[in-house]
Amino acid sequence: MAVKRKLSGKGISIPAGIAIGVVTAIGVTLLGALAMAAMVIRETVPMDGIGVGAMGILILASALGSWIGSGLTKQKKLLVCGLTALVFYLVLLSVTAVCFDGVYDGMGLTALLLTVGAGVPLLSGLRKKSGKSRVKIPAYR
Image 1 (cartoon, rainbow, N blue to C red):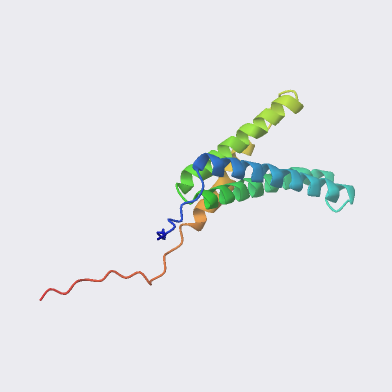
Image 2: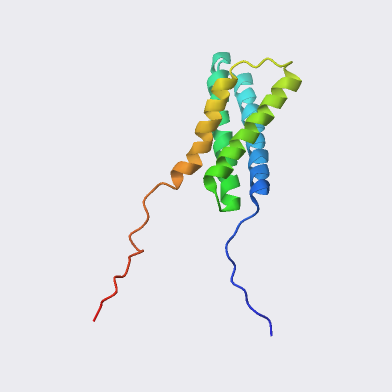
């Protein structure tokens, strides 16, 4: 007779969740850059607005990557969000080193934006729990 096992609800491993989160963040960054370039070509966004748009794209990419990575792992949310942002930052540093001849301009601001983006999924877990879980006080007779 087959034994039915209860699923524990445990997600994927932490390194796999971080890797999926980083790939998601890179994809969001590329799509955001493509959208920003399209808006500049159509002249809906001036050339001076690219910096603000890039900051928004970085925050959004870091937040979505951390959120998906921590959602898939279902454990150690702070560790997964922090490491996802750190690995994404290292990917951005390596792209800067290879493609832009190592001109590291504004990397402190980039690190700050990625940290803010990684903190967004952490803030969603801080809301109050519902009042449905009451502690039953045993009656002594």
